[in-house]
Every structure is written in structure tokens, then in C-alpha cells.
Length: 193
Image (cartoon, rainbow, N blue to C red; front, side, top):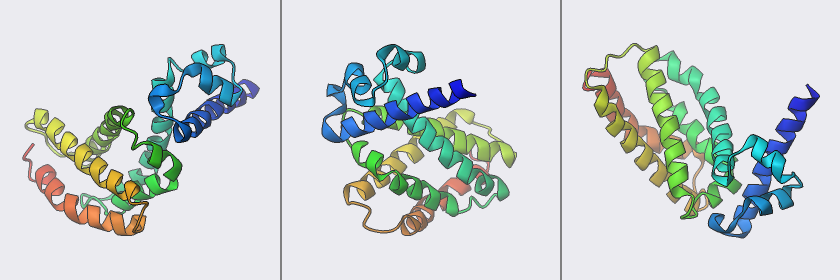
């Protein structure tokens, strides 16, 4: 039990140090040694938990998306209507993590963020399809739907962050749901995939 607390503490220190350093300098300039120095965590301990700084950043993103996934699952599974609250929770997730949200706009982490974001979009869509037992005739086309949702979502989120969250997460969620939901539901429910 004590070991688990130390592991979690080390991981948390490393993640918060990486974010703090990303505020100060470009991601590409940050070394594992610098993260360890900033966090006070020994380098061998770093490598017990992570393969490198990309793995550390993926860990942070993974934690953020895992929290989001846990929040939306009841809405995702409740109805075929794809509750608009899912979109509100997505935007709330980014505004609640505003420090990270701002550093994500650095060009040298965008590809990593998009890859992880795409993974979670896939997880959400597949969960929706599975729980509602929707047939997929052309499952290869699902990749296009996921790419579309990932790209559109990321661009909207990035603009909202760059403009310093000018409207609430609830307003963004409503707008996003109005834009995405009808077409997505049409494709999924009509058996077009």
C-alpha cells in the first residue's frame, strides 16, 4: 500500500513538472534529466514508470481522458440519442485542465495529442456501437468517422483554447452537439457503416 502511494506520488510529481516546464519552454527542448531535476524524482525512478518524456505526456493525457471517459459512460450507454451532455463534458474537461490545454497548442506536441485523442474517440464510438448493438457492415469506414471526429473536435477545441475560453463549456457543448450529433447519429443508426 505504501509502495502504491510512493509510485502515484512520483508519477504525479513527474507529470506536474513536465507541465510546468512546458509553460516555460518548448516541449522539444525539455529533457528527462530536466524533468527529474525539476520534480526531485531520481532518473532511475523515472524510467521505472516511463520510457521517455513522450510516454510521460501520454500518461498525463491518458489520465485526463480516463477521467472524461468515466464521466461520460453513463450518458453514452443510457440512450441511442447520444446525450449532448457528452459534448459539454468534453469541453469542461479541457477548461478544467486549462494549464495543460494551453501548452497543448505547442506545435511539437500536436501530433502526439492528436494520436491519443483519436484513441479515445475510437474508444467512445466503439463503446456506443457495442452497448447499443449497432451493426457495422463496413467497419473499415469507421476509421474515417473517427478521423473526422478527431480532427473536427481538435480544431474546435484548439480555437476555443487559443481564444482563452471565451464562452462556457456548456455553450461550446451545445454548439458542438448541434454540429456533430445529427450526422454522426444518422451514420451510426442508419447502418451506413
